[in-house]
Length: 317
Ligand code: GDP
Image (cartoon, rainbow, N blue to C red):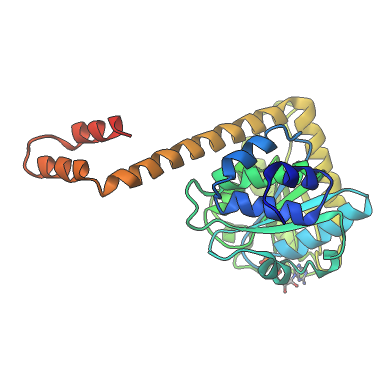
């Protein structure tokens, strides 16, 4: 397929899966065409509801994602899936096909599935994921599910990218709520207690309720109260209710003005991440530079202090 950006964007706009995949690759690989792609995507509508799916490994994220896709498709919605793997330098469909158990959806033209390896990406998820989300948006997706595959900071970072964050918990994974990562309970708009077919699911729900009631959500009656849904992702039980809550949260965000605030915050982080990346890249050209060696010598010899030296370096960027 030719890499003529405007034809690719036009083809993606007609829903062609290969064009969607190609555009996301261009974004992910930081291709020389990245700026051109970004400009061509700038007018994307922002229609797609971005839903982050996060939680500890083994909790059932990929099974739930697959079940969510099936349910959303049954209601006629177009769905994008972006699986972010912060631990892997690899990318591409094969890995994801295995991982997300998406074979059921492989021939469905209303589903776009992509993985994104974020390790080593300058600027991290904040810089790379939003462009991919715009590609899904251009392709007419109603909902984009962003799932973390690996572990690490991306589980929290995902909340900065999503409109709605679903945190998955499961019984029998260490000490229930105690096992949940620090910070993960604060980011949930919706909690899914998955593996509800297992012993301890009600205990997990009870503990979660009590922890959530302690966190101050303000007494503003218009504030969203995090919802708790019991699911069995392997059978699809509870998935309809999960979608109902996801939709309710979206309606709440739109009605309260919070959707706009979250998207502004996302754009701000994206700009910051890109600007810092640019500075880092310019710096990397400088770092082997004689000027830096010279400044280092002056600092070691006591001729200048490191702050003054840093100022001089920044001036040259
Ligand atoms: P992830 O690492 O969070 O993506 O978790 P997976 O979706 O890969 O699921 C981990 C394991 O838990 C798999 O063997 C799933 O079949 C199983 N699993 C997922 N959801 C459920 C559930 O609701 N009930 C039970 N019993 N097993 C589940």
